[in-house]
Length: 323
Picture (tube, rainbow, N blue to C red):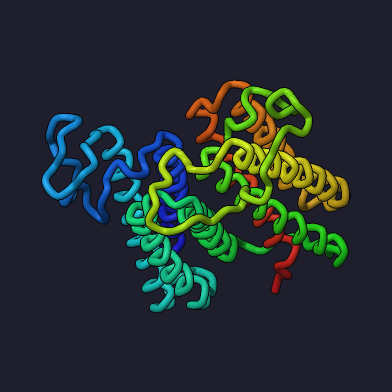
């Protein structure tokens, strides 16, 4: 049962990340201006669009409200399944030994994620809070995947991994994680189109006017950050940092694939990572030249998560010694 609930949790985690990305990219983060309900109700009020509901200054947009509420329903379901996992581990139900540390931390973390979901709304889509909420979704999924990997059978043939290669693997994991954070920061500051449709140039220039001092601007709590508040030179700087980070991450992953090419037991992992990397770079370019179509933007988020999980699986296989 533990493994079944764990697999359901992972599916829900993917759904939550997808719905979260879709909600953010369709500017529906404030579709319900309160939390956890929507205009004081458990679902979107059944009234005409544009109606100003008593107690709320923001007129209702039902489509945006439903996007936000579906995201909340899925996130609540995920929280419940993770809580069930904790109780199953507490009773000792996993097929393979699972300490309480990981299910316990996952339970705590998903509750923290709920708090960030609330702050995303109450702090009016502050880019720092929204970025942390996005990262939290990725971390939650990674924790569940790590638990599932712990439940898997050890490999029949074990091949020793050199320490220097393990170090490169950890560097790639850290760099990729930072690049995902930069991607979230680019999205939440509405900087994805700050370079226009130009690639690899930005605003038809290799190094346009950019304000790097404001690129990591946190900003005060309480201001309304919907559609962003930074000037375009700061947004262009964010976009260029993300592009440079993408180049560095790509080169490091290619180095990883080259160094690990002789480990036969990692071959399928490396092929998957190569496919996902190629797809992710392509989607990133298409986001720019096609002016951020929502389907491609959401896919860019999904593939980033899949790429991260693929590297995490490689870490698990390289560091986990069969007993």
